[in-house]
Image (tube, rainbow over all chains, first blue to last red; front, top):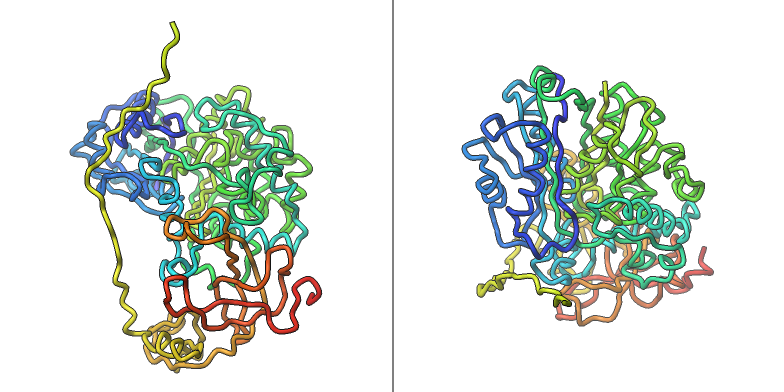
Amino acid sequence: MRRVAVVGVGSSRFGRRDDANLSELAFEAVKPAMDEAGVDSKDIGFASVGTVGTWYEEPLPAVVVAEYAGLNPTGLVRCEAACASGSGAFKVAHQSVASGESEIAMAIGVEKMTEVDTPTTIELIGRAGNYLWEFENVGITFAGYYALYASAHMAQYGTTEEQLAMVAVKNHKYGAMNPYAHFQKEITLEQALGSPFVAWPLRVYSCCPVSDGSAAIILASEQAAKKLTDTPVWVKAIGTASDTANLSKRPDYLGLRATMQASKQAYERAGVSPTDIDVAEVHDCFTIAEILAYEDLGFCEKGSGGRMIEDGETYIGGRVPINLDGGLKAKGHPLGATGCMMIAEVTRQLRGEAGKRQAPIKNGLGLAHNVGGTGHYCYVTILGRE
Amino acid sequence: MALKPEQPRTFKSARELRLRYHIPIAKTARFWDELENGRLTTTRCAKCGAIFFPPVADCSECRSSQMEWMPLSGEAVLQAVTRIDIKPASFAEEEPYLIAIGKLKEGVNVLARLVGTSVEVARIGMSLILRPARTREGNVWYEFAPAVGSRGKNSG
C-alpha cells in the first residue's frame, strides 16, 4: 500500500437547494476540488460517487454526475453506506490510489433530499434498518432510533436533556461562522430546550435538518501529490466496521459498537491515540449521537460524554475541538455529501485555513467519524500533516 | 425598486411512482400462523442452539439451516423507549405512539410499539409483556404493555 494524500477539496453550500439539480450541485464541489488540486478530468484515474438516493429522480446518480462534470470515460462507481456513503466513496478512491491502480482519484459525495415532501423523506429514512421487522408495522423514524439510544444512555449514566441541548448550542455557534452551513445562526440553550419533541427525548433542536449539498475530494499518490501541492494532507488510516440491521439484535443501547471497532482499527493503523487528535469531525445527526461519539471514539470515559460537553471540552480551547464547521446539526446532513464534507473540513483545519473556526494544531492530526444508519456502518478516517 | 422574491424554478414531474412490495415470508410463515392463533414463537438453531428474533431460516452463528420453532414467554424488561411525535408519511394519521425495545426472558430483544403507558411513567428496567396485537390496518402483529403489577416509576 502506497501513501496517499488529499490534494484538493471542494464543497457546495448546504441547505435547501431548489436552485440546482443533482449534477449541478455535485459540480459545485467537483470544480473547486479540481481547481485547488490543479488537475484535469483526464488526470483522474478513478471516480466514486457516494449517495443514497431515492428522494431524487435519478436512479443512476453517478453517471449523470460524471457526465455533467466531464469525467467520462473515467472508471466510475456509486457507493452506498447510508449516511456514511461519502466516506465509503472516499475509501474506494483511496484504495484505487493506494493499490497503485491510479495516480489520482476523486471521491464525490452528493445528496438532493428536498425534491420530495418532508414526511416522505422521513419515511424513507425511517425504513433504513430492517424494513419488515422494525418499520412496516411499527412506524419508527430515524430520530426514533437515536431517541431509543438517548433513553438508555440517560437512564444508565444520568445524561441530561440540558447536556443534549448544549451540543446543539455549540454546533450552531460554529455553524454561524461557516458560509457553507445550512443554518448560520446561533441558538440559546432555552431555545433548544423549548423546541417541540420530534421523538422523545429528542427535540427539533436535537436533530440535523434535511439538506441538499455536495463535497468532493481529490486523492493522489505521494509522487503525484508532491508535484501538485506544498500542503498535502496525508491519509494516515481508515478504520471500518458494521453492525446489525435490526436494532433489536444489539446487546445494549449505550454506545455504537461500530464506532468503537472502526476507531480502534484506525488508531492502531495510524499508530496514534485519541489524545493525539487536534481536531475532529464527529457524526452528530442527533445531539445524543455526538455524546455517544465522544465516548465511543475514546475522547472520554464511557458515560461521561454529557459531562464533556458541559465542561466545554469540545469547544476551541478545550481538550479536543469537535465539529467546528457546525457539524451535521447546523451545517446540514445531505447523506452522501457528509463523509466527504467532514474530510474537506479536517483538511482545511490541518492546513490552517479555517479562519475564525480554526483549531490550534499541535500534533498535526485530525479525525473524521462518519456513521451510516444507526451505527450500521462506521468509517473513521485519520488525516495528518506529516 | 423592491424586488419580489422569486419562487425557485422546478420542473414538477408528471410521473408518479407507486411502490408496494410483496415480501417473501415462506420460510418463516409459521411465525405468522402461530401469531394468528395468539401465540408468539421464534426460531432456534437445532445444531448450535442460538435463539433468534426475528425468526430466521438460516443460522448466522453456525450457518446451519436446521431451525426449530420455540414458544416465547412474552416476559420482558424495558431497555429503551421513545415516543414518535413527527411521524413517517404512511403513519401520518396516527396519534403520537411509543416504541420500545424489550429484552425477553429467552435472551433476545424485540422492538415493538409500547401501549398502556407514557414516556413520563415508563422506566428503563420495568417489566413488560409482549403480546399479539393488530395494527391499525388490521395486520396481526405484536406489542408491549406494562406487565401486570408493573407501574413504571415504582417498579424500579
